[in-house]
Image (cartoon, rainbow, N blue to C red; front, side):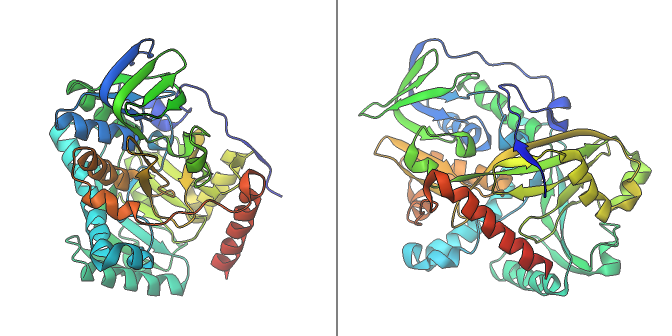
Length: 433
Protein backbone atom coordinates (compact mmCIF):
# COMPACT_ATOMS: atom_id res chain seq x y z
CA UNK A 1 0.00 0.00 0.00
CA UNK A 2 1.27 3.47 -0.88
CA UNK A 3 2.60 5.25 2.22
CA UNK A 4 1.22 8.76 2.67
CA UNK A 5 2.14 11.77 4.76
CA UNK A 6 1.06 15.37 5.19
CA UNK A 7 2.52 17.95 2.86
CA UNK A 8 5.33 19.95 4.42
CA UNK A 9 4.45 23.64 4.32
CA UNK A 10 6.30 26.63 5.73
CA UNK A 11 5.58 30.32 5.35
CA UNK A 12 8.27 30.54 2.69
CA UNK A 13 8.02 29.08 -0.80
CA UNK A 14 8.10 25.30 -1.22
CA UNK A 15 11.50 23.81 -2.10
CA UNK A 16 10.64 23.66 -5.79
CA UNK A 17 12.57 24.19 -9.00
CA UNK A 18 10.44 27.29 -9.48
CA UNK A 19 11.47 28.83 -6.16
CA UNK A 20 15.13 28.00 -6.84
CA UNK A 21 15.00 29.64 -10.29
CA UNK A 22 12.72 32.58 -9.46
CA UNK A 23 13.93 36.00 -10.51
CA UNK A 24 15.11 38.22 -7.65
CA UNK A 25 12.04 39.99 -6.37
CA UNK A 26 11.07 42.60 -3.86
CA UNK A 27 9.79 41.32 -0.55
CA UNK A 28 6.56 42.98 0.47
CA UNK A 29 6.00 44.13 4.05
CA UNK A 30 3.82 42.54 6.71
CA UNK A 31 0.64 44.46 7.44
CA UNK A 32 1.04 46.09 10.87
CA UNK A 33 -1.41 48.99 10.56
CA UNK A 34 -5.13 49.64 10.20
CA UNK A 35 -5.74 50.69 6.61
CA UNK A 36 -8.64 51.56 4.35
CA UNK A 37 -9.05 50.96 0.64
CA UNK A 38 -11.62 50.69 -2.11
CA UNK A 39 -11.14 46.93 -2.36
CA UNK A 40 -9.18 44.38 -0.34
CA UNK A 41 -8.18 41.12 -2.03
CA UNK A 42 -7.28 38.09 0.09
CA UNK A 43 -4.79 35.67 -1.49
CA UNK A 44 -1.87 36.56 -3.77
CA UNK A 45 -1.97 33.76 -6.29
CA UNK A 46 -2.91 34.19 -9.93
CA UNK A 47 -6.55 35.04 -9.18
CA UNK A 48 -5.89 37.60 -6.46
CA UNK A 49 -2.92 39.26 -8.15
CA UNK A 50 -4.62 39.56 -11.51
CA UNK A 51 -7.85 40.90 -10.02
CA UNK A 52 -5.79 43.48 -8.14
CA UNK A 53 -3.93 44.34 -11.35
CA UNK A 54 -7.14 44.65 -13.37
CA UNK A 55 -8.62 46.91 -10.69
CA UNK A 56 -5.47 49.03 -10.45
CA UNK A 57 -5.57 49.49 -14.23
CA UNK A 58 -9.10 50.82 -13.74
CA UNK A 59 -7.94 53.29 -11.08
CA UNK A 60 -9.06 51.55 -7.88
CA UNK A 61 -7.18 51.71 -4.59
CA UNK A 62 -6.45 48.06 -3.78
CA UNK A 63 -4.85 46.25 -0.85
CA UNK A 64 -3.68 42.68 -1.53
CA UNK A 65 -3.08 40.39 1.46
CA UNK A 66 -1.06 37.16 1.33
CA UNK A 67 -0.64 34.79 4.27
CA UNK A 68 2.80 33.65 3.12
CA UNK A 69 4.64 34.74 -0.05
CA UNK A 70 3.47 35.83 -3.51
CA UNK A 71 2.57 32.70 -5.47
CA UNK A 72 3.13 30.49 -2.41
CA UNK A 73 0.27 28.11 -3.16
CA UNK A 74 -0.79 26.35 -6.35
CA UNK A 75 0.01 29.38 -8.51
CA UNK A 76 3.72 28.99 -7.80
CA UNK A 77 3.90 25.17 -7.60
CA UNK A 78 1.88 23.85 -10.55
CA UNK A 79 3.05 22.11 -13.71
CA UNK A 80 3.31 25.39 -15.60
CA UNK A 81 0.88 24.24 -18.30
CA UNK A 82 -1.33 26.80 -20.01
CA UNK A 83 -4.54 25.00 -20.97
CA UNK A 84 -7.56 26.70 -22.51
CA UNK A 85 -11.11 26.11 -21.47
CA UNK A 86 -12.91 26.67 -18.19
CA UNK A 87 -14.19 23.78 -16.10
CA UNK A 88 -15.89 20.75 -17.58
CA UNK A 89 -18.97 20.51 -19.79
CA UNK A 90 -20.81 23.79 -19.13
CA UNK A 91 -23.74 22.34 -21.10
CA UNK A 92 -24.70 20.55 -17.86
CA UNK A 93 -25.82 23.93 -16.51
CA UNK A 94 -27.73 25.24 -19.51
CA UNK A 95 -31.00 25.40 -17.58
CA UNK A 96 -29.30 27.76 -15.11
CA UNK A 97 -27.29 29.94 -17.52
CA UNK A 98 -29.00 29.47 -20.88
CA UNK A 99 -27.44 28.55 -24.20
CA UNK A 100 -25.86 32.02 -24.43
CA UNK A 101 -24.19 31.44 -21.07
CA UNK A 102 -22.74 28.16 -22.29
CA UNK A 103 -21.39 29.85 -25.42
CA UNK A 104 -19.91 32.66 -23.35
CA UNK A 105 -18.04 30.23 -21.09
CA UNK A 106 -16.50 28.59 -24.13
CA UNK A 107 -15.49 31.99 -25.53
CA UNK A 108 -13.93 33.02 -22.20
CA UNK A 109 -12.00 29.73 -22.18
CA UNK A 110 -10.40 30.75 -25.47
CA UNK A 111 -9.69 34.30 -24.26
CA UNK A 112 -8.02 33.09 -21.04
CA UNK A 113 -4.76 32.17 -22.78
CA UNK A 114 -4.67 35.47 -24.66
CA UNK A 115 -4.70 37.37 -21.37
CA UNK A 116 -1.46 35.65 -20.34
CA UNK A 117 0.14 36.60 -23.66
CA UNK A 118 -1.07 40.17 -23.14
CA UNK A 119 0.24 40.33 -19.56
CA UNK A 120 3.69 39.09 -20.56
CA UNK A 121 3.97 41.54 -23.45
CA UNK A 122 2.51 44.58 -21.68
CA UNK A 123 4.60 44.28 -18.52
CA UNK A 124 7.69 42.62 -20.04
CA UNK A 125 7.50 39.57 -17.75
CA UNK A 126 10.30 37.03 -18.19
CA UNK A 127 8.62 33.68 -17.48
CA UNK A 128 9.88 31.30 -20.21
CA UNK A 129 6.58 31.49 -22.11
CA UNK A 130 6.30 28.97 -24.97
CA UNK A 131 3.36 27.81 -27.06
CA UNK A 132 2.51 24.25 -28.11
CA UNK A 133 0.76 21.40 -26.34
CA UNK A 134 0.04 17.69 -26.80
CA UNK A 135 -2.64 15.53 -25.29
CA UNK A 136 -1.38 11.94 -25.50
CA UNK A 137 -3.37 8.71 -25.87
CA UNK A 138 -2.80 5.55 -23.85
CA UNK A 139 -5.78 3.68 -25.31
CA UNK A 140 -7.72 3.66 -28.60
CA UNK A 141 -10.69 5.31 -26.90
CA UNK A 142 -8.47 8.28 -26.08
CA UNK A 143 -7.84 8.78 -29.80
CA UNK A 144 -11.58 8.77 -30.43
CA UNK A 145 -11.97 11.28 -27.63
CA UNK A 146 -9.32 13.52 -29.18
CA UNK A 147 -11.13 13.50 -32.51
CA UNK A 148 -14.27 14.66 -30.70
CA UNK A 149 -12.32 17.40 -28.91
CA UNK A 150 -10.85 18.63 -32.20
CA UNK A 151 -14.29 18.79 -33.80
CA UNK A 152 -15.67 20.60 -30.77
CA UNK A 153 -12.92 23.25 -30.75
CA UNK A 154 -13.47 23.89 -34.43
CA UNK A 155 -17.24 24.12 -33.91
CA UNK A 156 -16.93 26.79 -31.20
CA UNK A 157 -14.63 28.89 -33.37
CA UNK A 158 -11.32 28.34 -31.62
CA UNK A 159 -8.82 30.19 -33.84
CA UNK A 160 -5.91 27.92 -32.91
CA UNK A 161 -5.10 24.86 -34.99
CA UNK A 162 -5.63 21.31 -33.75
CA UNK A 163 -3.89 18.35 -35.37
CA UNK A 164 -4.60 14.67 -34.73
CA UNK A 165 -1.41 12.59 -34.55
CA UNK A 166 -0.86 8.88 -35.03
CA UNK A 167 1.91 7.06 -33.15
CA UNK A 168 4.65 8.04 -35.61
CA UNK A 169 3.48 11.65 -36.03
CA UNK A 170 3.40 12.13 -32.26
CA UNK A 171 7.14 11.48 -32.15
CA UNK A 172 7.66 14.84 -33.86
CA UNK A 173 6.61 16.28 -30.51
CA UNK A 174 6.95 13.55 -27.82
CA UNK A 175 9.47 10.74 -28.40
CA UNK A 176 7.98 8.04 -26.18
CA UNK A 177 6.79 4.52 -26.95
CA UNK A 178 4.16 4.82 -24.20
CA UNK A 179 1.54 6.49 -26.38
CA UNK A 180 -0.64 5.51 -29.35
CA UNK A 181 -0.98 9.02 -30.72
CA UNK A 182 -2.08 12.44 -29.65
CA UNK A 183 -3.70 15.79 -30.30
CA UNK A 184 -1.42 18.79 -30.87
CA UNK A 185 -2.61 22.37 -30.59
CA UNK A 186 -0.97 25.76 -30.90
CA UNK A 187 -3.18 27.58 -28.42
CA UNK A 188 -1.94 25.96 -25.21
CA UNK A 189 1.60 26.17 -23.91
CA UNK A 190 3.82 26.33 -20.84
CA UNK A 191 5.79 28.73 -18.68
CA UNK A 192 7.51 29.31 -15.33
CA UNK A 193 4.41 29.95 -13.19
CA UNK A 194 6.12 31.53 -10.19
CA UNK A 195 8.00 34.03 -12.33
CA UNK A 196 4.73 34.94 -14.06
CA UNK A 197 3.05 35.40 -10.69
CA UNK A 198 5.89 37.54 -9.32
CA UNK A 199 5.95 39.62 -12.50
CA UNK A 200 2.22 40.26 -12.31
CA UNK A 201 2.57 41.30 -8.67
CA UNK A 202 5.28 43.79 -9.64
CA UNK A 203 2.96 45.16 -12.31
CA UNK A 204 0.12 45.59 -9.79
CA UNK A 205 2.45 47.28 -7.30
CA UNK A 206 3.73 49.64 -9.99
CA UNK A 207 0.14 50.84 -10.47
CA UNK A 208 -0.36 51.55 -6.78
CA UNK A 209 -1.61 48.27 -5.33
CA UNK A 210 -0.42 47.91 -1.74
CA UNK A 211 0.78 44.32 -1.27
CA UNK A 212 1.43 42.70 2.09
CA UNK A 213 3.02 39.28 2.60
CA UNK A 214 3.15 37.22 5.81
CA UNK A 215 -0.24 38.76 6.60
CA UNK A 216 -2.63 35.92 7.27
CA UNK A 217 -6.30 36.87 7.53
CA UNK A 218 -7.72 35.64 10.81
CA UNK A 219 -11.15 37.29 10.83
CA UNK A 220 -13.65 38.64 8.34
CA UNK A 221 -16.10 41.16 9.79
CA UNK A 222 -19.11 41.77 7.50
CA UNK A 223 -20.90 45.09 7.31
CA UNK A 224 -21.51 48.10 5.05
CA UNK A 225 -17.73 48.54 5.05
CA UNK A 226 -16.38 45.07 5.86
CA UNK A 227 -13.17 44.71 7.82
CA UNK A 228 -10.48 42.12 7.20
CA UNK A 229 -8.31 41.51 10.24
CA UNK A 230 -4.84 39.96 9.98
CA UNK A 231 -2.50 38.79 12.73
CA UNK A 232 -1.07 42.32 13.16
CA UNK A 233 -3.35 44.74 11.32
CA UNK A 234 -6.58 45.25 9.46
CA UNK A 235 -8.09 46.68 6.27
CA UNK A 236 -11.51 48.28 5.98
CA UNK A 237 -12.88 48.51 2.44
CA UNK A 238 -15.99 48.95 0.34
CA UNK A 239 -15.62 45.44 -1.08
CA UNK A 240 -13.74 42.25 -0.15
CA UNK A 241 -12.68 39.53 -2.59
CA UNK A 242 -11.61 36.12 -1.25
CA UNK A 243 -9.11 34.25 -3.47
CA UNK A 244 -7.49 31.81 -1.04
CA UNK A 245 -8.88 28.75 -2.83
CA UNK A 246 -7.50 25.49 -1.34
CA UNK A 247 -5.54 27.47 1.25
CA UNK A 248 -8.37 29.66 2.57
CA UNK A 249 -8.93 27.22 5.42
CA UNK A 250 -12.08 27.59 7.50
CA UNK A 251 -12.24 31.39 7.32
CA UNK A 252 -15.67 31.05 5.69
CA UNK A 253 -17.11 27.61 6.56
CA UNK A 254 -19.64 27.77 3.72
CA UNK A 255 -16.83 28.04 1.17
CA UNK A 256 -14.68 25.43 2.90
CA UNK A 257 -17.48 22.86 2.61
CA UNK A 258 -17.61 23.30 -1.16
CA UNK A 259 -13.96 22.72 -1.89
CA UNK A 260 -11.71 19.72 -1.32
CA UNK A 261 -7.95 20.35 -1.16
CA UNK A 262 -6.35 17.67 -3.34
CA UNK A 263 -2.60 17.05 -3.62
CA UNK A 264 -0.51 16.94 -6.78
CA UNK A 265 3.28 16.66 -7.00
CA UNK A 266 6.16 17.39 -9.38
CA UNK A 267 9.79 16.33 -9.70
CA UNK A 268 12.53 18.10 -11.68
CA UNK A 269 15.59 16.30 -13.04
CA UNK A 270 19.04 17.73 -13.36
CA UNK A 271 19.63 19.76 -16.57
CA UNK A 272 19.71 17.19 -19.38
CA UNK A 273 21.42 19.30 -22.00
CA UNK A 274 19.85 20.43 -25.30
CA UNK A 275 20.51 17.18 -27.20
CA UNK A 276 18.97 14.80 -24.64
CA UNK A 277 16.11 17.14 -23.83
CA UNK A 278 15.09 17.53 -27.47
CA UNK A 279 15.46 13.79 -28.00
CA UNK A 280 12.71 13.34 -25.39
CA UNK A 281 10.33 16.18 -26.31
CA UNK A 282 11.41 17.34 -29.80
CA UNK A 283 8.52 19.79 -30.02
CA UNK A 284 9.29 21.42 -26.64
CA UNK A 285 5.58 21.14 -25.86
CA UNK A 286 3.65 20.66 -22.64
CA UNK A 287 2.17 17.16 -22.42
CA UNK A 288 -0.73 15.62 -20.54
CA UNK A 289 -2.61 12.31 -20.67
CA UNK A 290 -6.42 12.07 -20.24
CA UNK A 291 -6.68 9.87 -17.14
CA UNK A 292 -8.32 10.96 -13.91
CA UNK A 293 -4.99 10.70 -12.02
CA UNK A 294 -3.03 11.98 -14.97
CA UNK A 295 0.65 12.43 -15.78
CA UNK A 296 1.80 15.82 -17.04
CA UNK A 297 5.28 16.86 -18.08
CA UNK A 298 7.38 19.34 -20.02
CA UNK A 299 10.91 20.70 -20.33
CA UNK A 300 12.08 23.71 -18.36
CA UNK A 301 14.02 26.52 -19.98
CA UNK A 302 17.28 24.98 -18.73
CA UNK A 303 16.38 21.53 -20.16
CA UNK A 304 15.16 19.76 -17.04
CA UNK A 305 12.34 17.26 -17.24
CA UNK A 306 9.49 18.48 -15.04
CA UNK A 307 7.23 15.50 -14.43
CA UNK A 308 4.06 15.73 -12.36
CA UNK A 309 1.06 13.76 -11.24
CA UNK A 310 -0.11 11.71 -8.23
CA UNK A 311 -3.31 13.74 -7.89
CA UNK A 312 -5.35 12.29 -5.05
CA UNK A 313 -8.19 13.28 -2.73
CA UNK A 314 -6.57 12.16 0.50
CA UNK A 315 -4.89 15.54 0.99
CA UNK A 316 -1.62 13.67 1.57
CA UNK A 317 1.52 13.10 -0.49
CA UNK A 318 3.50 9.85 -0.90
CA UNK A 319 6.20 9.35 1.71
CA UNK A 320 8.52 8.42 -1.16
CA UNK A 321 7.46 11.22 -3.48
CA UNK A 322 10.66 11.08 -5.56
CA UNK A 323 10.63 7.31 -5.96
CA UNK A 324 6.94 7.20 -6.83
CA UNK A 325 7.11 9.92 -9.48
CA UNK A 326 10.43 8.63 -10.85
CA UNK A 327 8.82 5.27 -11.56
CA UNK A 328 6.01 6.97 -13.43
CA UNK A 329 8.50 9.08 -15.39
CA UNK A 330 10.56 6.05 -16.40
CA UNK A 331 7.49 4.33 -17.82
CA UNK A 332 7.32 7.23 -20.28
CA UNK A 333 11.04 7.92 -20.70
CA UNK A 334 13.17 4.87 -19.74
CA UNK A 335 16.32 6.67 -20.89
CA UNK A 336 16.09 8.92 -17.81
CA UNK A 337 16.96 6.04 -15.48
CA UNK A 338 20.29 7.61 -14.54
CA UNK A 339 19.05 11.23 -14.39
CA UNK A 340 19.47 12.87 -10.99
CA UNK A 341 16.34 14.32 -9.37
CA UNK A 342 17.20 17.80 -8.13
CA UNK A 343 13.81 18.97 -6.84
CA UNK A 344 10.57 17.41 -5.61
CA UNK A 345 7.54 19.21 -4.21
CA UNK A 346 3.80 19.01 -3.82
CA UNK A 347 0.89 21.33 -3.19
CA UNK A 348 -2.84 21.57 -2.86
CA UNK A 349 -5.37 22.26 -5.59
CA UNK A 350 -9.00 23.17 -4.92
CA UNK A 351 -11.46 20.58 -6.24
CA UNK A 352 -15.15 21.40 -6.64
CA UNK A 353 -17.81 18.71 -6.79
CA UNK A 354 -19.01 19.73 -10.26
CA UNK A 355 -15.57 20.72 -11.64
CA UNK A 356 -16.58 24.30 -12.47
CA UNK A 357 -14.96 27.37 -10.89
CA UNK A 358 -16.99 28.76 -8.01
CA UNK A 359 -17.71 32.48 -8.22
CA UNK A 360 -20.25 34.22 -6.06
CA UNK A 361 -21.12 36.51 -3.18
CA UNK A 362 -21.19 35.99 0.58
CA UNK A 363 -23.17 39.23 0.86
CA UNK A 364 -23.35 42.53 -1.01
CA UNK A 365 -19.82 43.49 0.01
CA UNK A 366 -17.95 40.15 0.08
CA UNK A 367 -17.33 38.00 -3.01
CA UNK A 368 -15.18 34.97 -3.75
CA UNK A 369 -13.48 32.86 -6.45
CA UNK A 370 -12.27 29.29 -5.89
CA UNK A 371 -12.16 25.67 -7.13
CA UNK A 372 -10.31 25.46 -10.45
CA UNK A 373 -10.00 21.69 -9.95
CA UNK A 374 -6.38 21.47 -11.10
CA UNK A 375 -6.93 23.50 -14.25
CA UNK A 376 -6.18 27.07 -13.25
CA UNK A 377 -3.19 28.78 -14.88
CA UNK A 378 -5.20 30.24 -17.76
CA UNK A 379 -8.72 30.31 -16.22
CA UNK A 380 -7.53 32.32 -13.20
CA UNK A 381 -6.61 35.14 -15.53
CA UNK A 382 -9.98 35.42 -17.19
CA UNK A 383 -11.81 34.92 -13.88
CA UNK A 384 -9.82 37.86 -12.52
CA UNK A 385 -10.84 40.00 -15.48
CA UNK A 386 -14.56 39.29 -15.20
CA UNK A 387 -14.42 39.77 -11.41
CA UNK A 388 -12.74 43.15 -11.75
CA UNK A 389 -15.44 44.07 -14.26
CA UNK A 390 -18.11 43.00 -11.76
CA UNK A 391 -16.55 45.11 -9.02
CA UNK A 392 -16.48 48.01 -11.49
CA UNK A 393 -20.21 47.70 -12.16
CA UNK A 394 -20.18 45.28 -15.13
CA UNK A 395 -21.43 42.00 -13.63
CA UNK A 396 -22.59 40.16 -16.77
CA UNK A 397 -19.91 37.47 -17.13
CA UNK A 398 -19.47 37.06 -13.37
CA UNK A 399 -23.20 36.50 -12.97
CA UNK A 400 -23.13 33.65 -15.51
CA UNK A 401 -20.78 31.72 -13.25
CA UNK A 402 -22.58 32.83 -10.08
CA UNK A 403 -25.77 31.17 -11.37
CA UNK A 404 -24.10 27.74 -11.58
CA UNK A 405 -25.07 25.71 -8.49
CA UNK A 406 -22.35 24.32 -6.25
CA UNK A 407 -22.98 21.79 -3.53
CA UNK A 408 -21.06 20.96 -0.35
CA UNK A 409 -19.15 17.70 -0.41
CA UNK A 410 -21.18 14.96 1.27
CA UNK A 411 -20.10 13.46 4.56
CA UNK A 412 -18.97 16.62 6.32
CA UNK A 413 -15.40 17.03 7.54
CA UNK A 414 -15.17 13.46 8.77
CA UNK A 415 -16.32 11.47 5.75
CA UNK A 416 -16.07 13.62 2.64
CA UNK A 417 -12.37 12.93 2.00
CA UNK A 418 -12.56 9.10 2.33
CA UNK A 419 -15.64 9.10 0.13
CA UNK A 420 -13.95 11.09 -2.61
CA UNK A 421 -10.80 8.97 -2.32
CA UNK A 422 -12.93 5.90 -3.00
CA UNK A 423 -14.48 7.69 -5.95
CA UNK A 424 -11.06 8.45 -7.40
CA UNK A 425 -10.06 4.80 -6.92
CA UNK A 426 -13.06 3.83 -9.05
CA UNK A 427 -12.08 6.26 -11.82
CA UNK A 428 -8.49 4.99 -11.71
CA UNK A 429 -9.80 1.45 -12.16
CA UNK A 430 -11.94 2.58 -15.09
CA UNK A 431 -8.91 4.32 -16.64
CA UNK A 432 -6.97 1.06 -16.44
CA UNK A 433 -9.59 -0.91 -18.37
